Image (cartoon, rainbow, N blue to C red; front, side, top):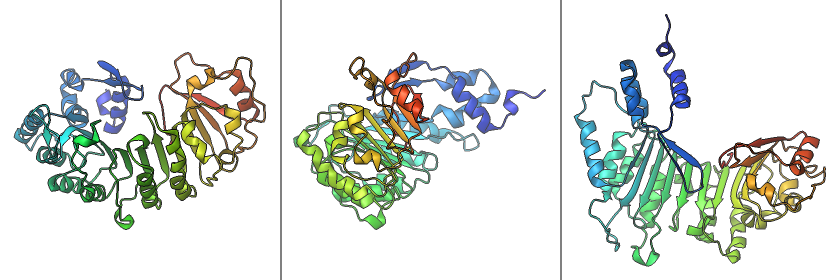
Length: 382
């Protein structure tokens, strides 16, 4: 009789992801719920699953911040017979990485170093698609790491976040090194930056990055503008975060970057309408998706501005608790979306299981045949 293991591996893999039960849960920096499942336990259920679980799931996501642990892991894999299945790592997180000889002295000696990081990357150079680097210094990455990244054949997503260390304790950044790192990732599609490094890119050497996420509080407006201009030929999705307090005087200085990108951007994600304010009179002829988590101004006063009325927006996303900020008894006019004929979906993010769309949104959405959708997390929709 045909059994579940006779299914094609890709179908069985999808089933496995949906049925496995998380052993641990936590929340990330944005409040999104995460879970961890110890896949190794399931290898004991069925011997036929053992190799498949080892190869595709056991080391799917790895995080290292200790030199000792990383070295022992490398030795274990190197001792494994070449005839046995080789594990695949899709996401590698190098935390507390000590790039070079900066002025910062680590509190412990067992810190992850560049030579060890290069060896880790080399183990999975053909399977890693997401690489997260958290260096302890600004920014001295050794040539072996850059070469290891250049040899990666499937890297699509690079995330770089420096520790929250006072800048006076950091060595001066090595701009050439950082530029070499990004250029080395020649298949890169997505770049996430949480670092004050200023970039000096040569556009024709850059990978075709389509998605850029920047923590705007950790960089300068000039750096952001330079980066936007350098990536303009390929960039389609832009996400700006301001988790820390952003000086209101700095917000208008973001305008030059958006002026440079306005004709090509297809999706924009912002943490609040305060970042949206300088953009409201710009026209974005290709903008299809706009995600703004926190709305500090009345919705109807924002949606009548040029950015909304002159763009072919199809999806607008906002935090679900936005609905509780409207004054009791307030009603939007039925023509709230009349100037947005392409709008098809209104998404409420981070919604609880019992979330219900309030009538003030439901009525105008119904009048214009717009779907209201609730999701339990934040999403860029790029």
